[in-house]
Amino acid sequence: MKGLVLKDMYSIRFVVIASLLMSLFPSFLLIMFDITADAEGGILGELVSYLVFGIVNYITLMLFPSCGVSSIALDKKCGFDRYQATMPVTPAQLMAGKQISSGIVVGIFVLLCIGVDLTGLQYGLSPEVLIVMPVSIGLLELASVQVSLYVVLRFGERILSLVQLVIMIAGAAFLCLIFLLMERVQHMDVVLRIVCYGVMPLLAAAAIVFFGRAGRKLYSVEARD
Image 1 (cartoon, rainbow, N blue to C red):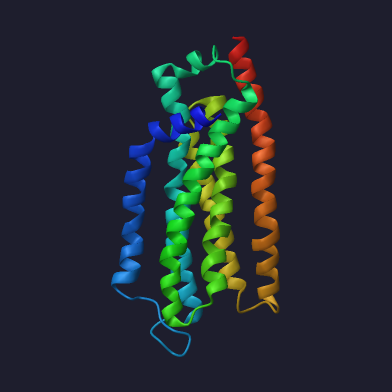
Image 2 (tube, rainbow, N blue to C red; image 1 turned 60 degrees about the horizontal axis):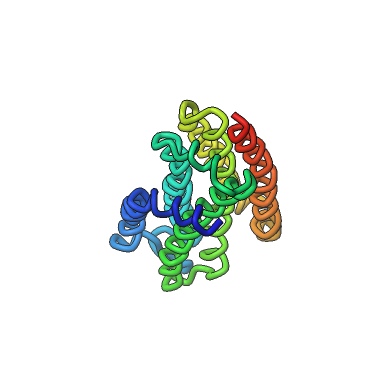
Protein backbone atom coordinates (compact mmCIF):
# COMPACT_ATOMS: atom_id res chain seq x y z
CA MET A 1 0.00 0.00 0.00
CA LYS A 2 2.75 2.45 0.96
CA GLY A 3 4.58 1.68 -2.27
CA LEU A 4 1.47 2.36 -4.37
CA VAL A 5 0.90 5.71 -2.68
CA LEU A 6 4.55 6.73 -3.06
CA LYS A 7 4.49 5.67 -6.72
CA ASP A 8 1.46 7.87 -7.39
CA MET A 9 2.96 10.84 -5.56
CA TYR A 10 6.26 10.42 -7.39
CA SER A 11 4.60 10.15 -10.80
CA ILE A 12 2.62 13.37 -10.36
CA ARG A 13 5.17 15.33 -8.33
CA PHE A 14 5.93 17.84 -11.09
CA VAL A 15 2.23 18.36 -11.79
CA VAL A 16 1.57 18.97 -8.09
CA ILE A 17 4.49 21.42 -7.79
CA ALA A 18 3.39 23.30 -10.92
CA SER A 19 -0.20 23.44 -9.66
CA LEU A 20 0.96 24.74 -6.27
CA LEU A 21 2.96 27.50 -7.94
CA MET A 22 0.01 28.45 -10.15
CA SER A 23 -2.37 28.44 -7.20
CA LEU A 24 -0.12 30.91 -5.39
CA PHE A 25 -0.87 33.57 -8.01
CA PRO A 26 -4.40 34.53 -6.83
CA SER A 27 -3.23 34.20 -3.23
CA PHE A 28 -0.29 36.50 -3.98
CA LEU A 29 -2.63 39.09 -5.49
CA LEU A 30 -4.87 38.87 -2.44
CA ILE A 31 -1.99 39.67 -0.10
CA MET A 32 -0.03 42.02 -2.37
CA PHE A 33 -2.83 44.43 -3.19
CA ASP A 34 -4.43 44.27 0.27
CA ILE A 35 -7.94 44.13 -1.24
CA THR A 36 -9.71 42.96 1.88
CA ALA A 37 -10.71 45.24 4.72
CA ASP A 38 -11.61 45.14 8.36
CA ALA A 39 -15.12 44.86 9.69
CA GLU A 40 -15.19 48.49 10.85
CA GLY A 41 -15.71 50.35 7.63
CA GLY A 42 -12.77 49.43 5.44
CA ILE A 43 -12.74 49.35 1.67
CA LEU A 44 -14.90 46.29 1.22
CA GLY A 45 -16.31 45.30 4.57
CA GLU A 46 -16.44 42.01 6.42
CA LEU A 47 -18.87 40.04 4.24
CA VAL A 48 -17.16 40.90 0.97
CA SER A 49 -13.78 40.15 2.55
CA TYR A 50 -15.00 36.63 3.31
CA LEU A 51 -16.28 36.40 -0.26
CA VAL A 52 -12.85 37.34 -1.64
CA PHE A 53 -11.13 34.71 0.49
CA GLY A 54 -13.83 32.20 -0.50
CA ILE A 55 -13.29 32.82 -4.21
CA VAL A 56 -9.52 32.39 -3.87
CA ASN A 57 -10.05 29.20 -1.84
CA TYR A 58 -12.52 27.83 -4.37
CA ILE A 59 -10.27 28.51 -7.36
CA THR A 60 -7.27 26.97 -5.60
CA LEU A 61 -9.02 23.90 -4.20
CA MET A 62 -11.41 23.01 -7.02
CA LEU A 63 -9.09 23.66 -9.95
CA PHE A 64 -5.67 22.34 -8.98
CA PRO A 65 -5.91 19.29 -6.63
CA SER A 66 -7.65 17.25 -9.34
CA CYS A 67 -4.17 16.75 -10.80
CA GLY A 68 -4.01 13.76 -8.45
CA VAL A 69 -6.46 11.97 -10.73
CA SER A 70 -3.89 12.08 -13.52
CA SER A 71 -1.99 9.21 -11.87
CA ILE A 72 -4.57 6.77 -13.26
CA ALA A 73 -4.18 8.21 -16.76
CA LEU A 74 -0.39 7.90 -16.44
CA ASP A 75 -0.79 4.27 -15.33
CA LYS A 76 -2.78 3.50 -18.46
CA LYS A 77 -0.38 5.33 -20.78
CA CYS A 78 2.75 3.60 -19.50
CA GLY A 79 1.08 0.19 -19.15
CA PHE A 80 1.42 0.05 -15.38
CA ASP A 81 -2.27 -0.89 -15.04
CA ARG A 82 -1.45 -4.24 -16.68
CA TYR A 83 1.68 -4.72 -14.60
CA GLN A 84 -0.11 -4.05 -11.31
CA ALA A 85 -2.61 -6.79 -12.15
CA THR A 86 0.24 -9.28 -11.58
CA MET A 87 1.28 -7.74 -8.27
CA PRO A 88 0.32 -9.30 -4.91
CA VAL A 89 -2.18 -6.53 -4.15
CA THR A 90 -5.95 -6.63 -4.02
CA PRO A 91 -8.34 -4.37 -5.95
CA ALA A 92 -9.24 -2.79 -2.60
CA GLN A 93 -5.60 -1.85 -2.01
CA LEU A 94 -5.25 -0.43 -5.53
CA MET A 95 -8.29 1.81 -5.12
CA ALA A 96 -7.32 2.78 -1.58
CA GLY A 97 -3.88 3.81 -2.84
CA LYS A 98 -5.46 6.16 -5.41
CA GLN A 99 -7.81 7.61 -2.80
CA ILE A 100 -5.02 8.16 -0.27
CA SER A 101 -2.67 9.83 -2.76
CA SER A 102 -5.47 12.08 -4.03
CA GLY A 103 -6.41 12.90 -0.44
CA ILE A 104 -2.81 13.89 0.31
CA VAL A 105 -2.81 16.27 -2.65
CA VAL A 106 -6.08 17.86 -1.51
CA GLY A 107 -4.68 18.16 2.02
CA ILE A 108 -1.59 20.00 0.76
CA PHE A 109 -3.75 22.58 -0.99
CA VAL A 110 -6.04 22.95 2.03
CA LEU A 111 -3.03 23.77 4.22
CA LEU A 112 -1.90 26.31 1.63
CA CYS A 113 -5.31 28.01 1.67
CA ILE A 114 -5.43 28.06 5.48
CA GLY A 115 -2.03 29.73 5.55
CA VAL A 116 -3.20 32.42 3.11
CA ASP A 117 -6.57 32.90 4.82
CA LEU A 118 -4.99 33.48 8.23
CA THR A 119 -3.58 36.74 6.86
CA GLY A 120 -7.16 37.97 7.23
CA LEU A 121 -6.75 37.98 11.00
CA GLN A 122 -5.11 41.40 10.71
CA TYR A 123 -8.44 42.74 9.40
CA GLY A 124 -10.41 41.44 12.36
CA LEU A 125 -11.96 38.52 10.46
CA SER A 126 -13.07 35.42 12.36
CA PRO A 127 -10.35 32.74 12.65
CA GLU A 128 -13.07 30.07 12.71
CA VAL A 129 -14.38 31.15 9.31
CA LEU A 130 -10.91 31.56 7.84
CA ILE A 131 -10.03 27.95 8.80
CA VAL A 132 -13.37 26.23 8.30
CA MET A 133 -13.95 27.75 4.86
CA PRO A 134 -10.95 26.13 3.09
CA VAL A 135 -11.46 22.88 5.01
CA SER A 136 -15.11 22.70 3.88
CA ILE A 137 -14.23 23.48 0.28
CA GLY A 138 -11.44 20.91 0.54
CA LEU A 139 -13.97 18.28 1.67
CA LEU A 140 -16.13 19.20 -1.32
CA GLU A 141 -13.14 18.77 -3.60
CA LEU A 142 -12.27 15.47 -1.92
CA ALA A 143 -15.77 14.23 -2.76
CA SER A 144 -15.47 15.44 -6.36
CA VAL A 145 -12.07 13.72 -6.70
CA GLN A 146 -13.74 10.41 -5.83
CA VAL A 147 -16.16 10.96 -8.71
CA SER A 148 -13.26 11.84 -11.02
CA LEU A 149 -11.34 8.71 -10.01
CA TYR A 150 -14.33 6.54 -10.89
CA VAL A 151 -14.92 8.36 -14.19
CA VAL A 152 -11.29 7.86 -15.26
CA LEU A 153 -11.38 4.17 -14.31
CA ARG A 154 -14.73 3.57 -16.00
CA PHE A 155 -14.57 5.78 -19.09
CA GLY A 156 -10.98 6.96 -19.37
CA GLU A 157 -10.18 10.65 -19.86
CA ARG A 158 -12.79 11.20 -22.55
CA ILE A 159 -15.44 12.83 -20.40
CA LEU A 160 -13.37 13.72 -17.34
CA SER A 161 -13.07 17.41 -18.23
CA LEU A 162 -16.83 17.67 -18.74
CA VAL A 163 -17.57 15.98 -15.40
CA GLN A 164 -15.11 18.22 -13.56
CA LEU A 165 -16.60 21.33 -15.21
CA VAL A 166 -20.11 20.35 -14.15
CA ILE A 167 -18.93 19.73 -10.58
CA MET A 168 -17.13 23.08 -10.43
CA ILE A 169 -20.15 25.00 -11.74
CA ALA A 170 -22.50 23.23 -9.33
CA GLY A 171 -20.16 23.88 -6.40
CA ALA A 172 -19.74 27.54 -7.34
CA ALA A 173 -23.52 27.97 -7.58
CA PHE A 174 -23.96 26.39 -4.15
CA LEU A 175 -21.36 28.65 -2.54
CA CYS A 176 -22.82 31.76 -4.21
CA LEU A 177 -26.23 30.82 -2.83
CA ILE A 178 -24.77 30.58 0.67
CA PHE A 179 -23.18 34.03 0.42
CA LEU A 180 -26.41 35.55 -0.93
CA LEU A 181 -28.38 34.12 1.99
CA MET A 182 -25.91 35.13 4.69
CA GLU A 183 -27.56 38.49 5.41
CA ARG A 184 -31.11 37.48 4.52
CA VAL A 185 -31.69 34.36 6.62
CA GLN A 186 -31.92 34.46 10.38
CA HIS A 187 -29.51 32.22 12.28
CA MET A 188 -27.53 31.65 9.08
CA ASP A 189 -24.46 31.06 11.23
CA VAL A 190 -26.17 27.96 12.66
CA VAL A 191 -27.02 26.72 9.17
CA LEU A 192 -23.44 27.23 8.01
CA ARG A 193 -22.07 25.32 10.99
CA ILE A 194 -24.42 22.43 10.21
CA VAL A 195 -23.23 22.45 6.59
CA CYS A 196 -19.52 22.79 7.40
CA TYR A 197 -19.31 20.51 10.43
CA GLY A 198 -21.94 17.98 9.40
CA VAL A 199 -22.95 17.92 5.72
CA MET A 200 -19.51 18.36 4.14
CA PRO A 201 -17.74 15.63 6.15
CA LEU A 202 -20.66 13.24 5.54
CA LEU A 203 -20.61 14.05 1.81
CA ALA A 204 -16.87 13.39 1.57
CA ALA A 205 -17.15 10.16 3.60
CA ALA A 206 -20.08 8.91 1.52
CA ALA A 207 -18.22 9.64 -1.73
CA ILE A 208 -15.10 7.83 -0.48
CA VAL A 209 -17.10 4.75 0.52
CA PHE A 210 -19.43 4.60 -2.48
CA PHE A 211 -16.94 5.35 -5.25
CA GLY A 212 -14.27 3.34 -3.43
CA ARG A 213 -16.46 0.24 -3.72
CA ALA A 214 -17.28 1.03 -7.34
CA GLY A 215 -13.58 1.50 -8.11
CA ARG A 216 -12.68 -1.81 -6.48
CA LYS A 217 -15.18 -3.58 -8.72
CA LEU A 218 -13.62 -1.99 -11.81
CA TYR A 219 -10.13 -3.04 -10.69
CA SER A 220 -11.49 -6.56 -10.11
CA VAL A 221 -12.81 -6.66 -13.68
CA GLU A 222 -9.47 -5.43 -15.04
CA ALA A 223 -7.63 -8.12 -13.04
CA ARG A 224 -9.82 -10.87 -14.51
CA ASP A 225 -9.32 -9.52 -18.02
